[in-house]
Image 1: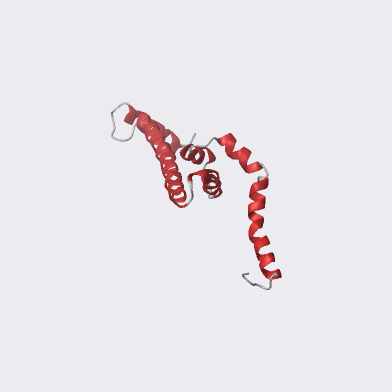
Image 2: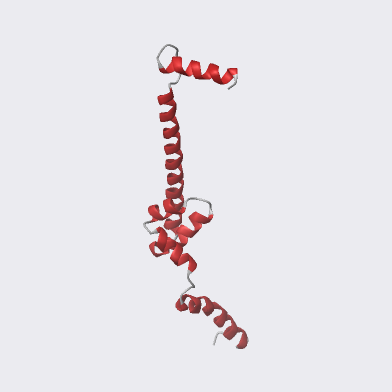
Length: 125
């Protein structure tokens, strides 16, 4: 043990007994807990702000896409899902499954319209 460690230990003991001014061990532990909780709350606030911004643009049915975007920005999945009102297991299940046939068909519609339009020499009739 170094002299500095012993000095700090003795000094902290005097502070804890009230013989010397300073931050007690208990206060230090409470400050650490408070700082962790503040970080958690700041993260939740960031998720809520981003989710509200995205939900204002997107309809309510698009919560899954919003959750994907929030998670892709590096925010915790659990907090994002909780704030959006979806389950974590549902988020992962939806993220890992193939898109439904209807979504695939709808994605193809613009291509089909362009092809028909090109074949008709771009006539509108």
